[in-house]
Image (cartoon, rainbow, N blue to C red; front, side):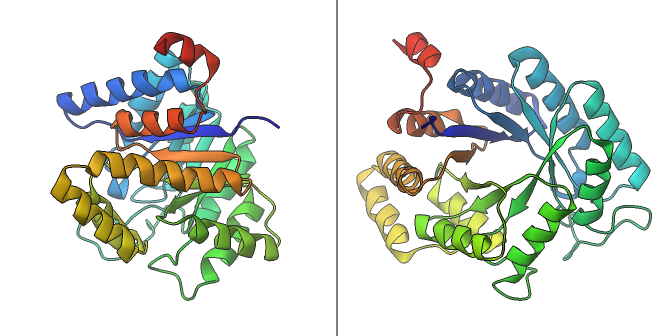
Length: 288
């Protein structure tokens, strides 16, 4: 049996300090031999050029397989496909195709008049190029825009049928959340790999804000545990234990890939990967 694979998500920097933090993060995690790394778009496509620049720099300087995020927000079809061709020109082989969040100040996503009306159209256009492996998002808990609990699964199947080959989930706090979702996907006839998205908890307050925005349920027991840990100054230890335990349970249940949302802070992600015993031999030699 092959060793489970890991991958990491970064976001493009918008300040000089953030640039240093991104490169420190990439340098710290590159020795863990990720299957791929992804680089996000800002809300409303606000970091489009920054994303492109970060993708190119990571691929050129670190030799990593970079999956560039691409959305339907605030761009014409021609503008979006020009970005796609620019990625192909620099050797990008994977794209994470997403509808994208609404632009700042807007409550809901509205398609550009000359743009892709939905992520399905974007996926089909990418698939027609024949140049990319296409990954998409998945939601183990109901997306805020979903009509019912099964709507996300039906929509995921449509995205995969349109040309995507795998999915990365939104983060969750309990392994059972992902495992139930995986089982429901199988019942719906989905056979493509579904990679669980893991959020190492750098800040419990920040994690709860993220959860509120994307509909992730916060377990009361975890809220209580972090409250107690904060009193004793043991939040870091709890965060490491929580994330390692979550990942270990998923691996025990047959999960073969873990995708970490690093928030451009490498320490906790690196420690979790080490605790799980997933550090490649070359990295172990460097650590020794």
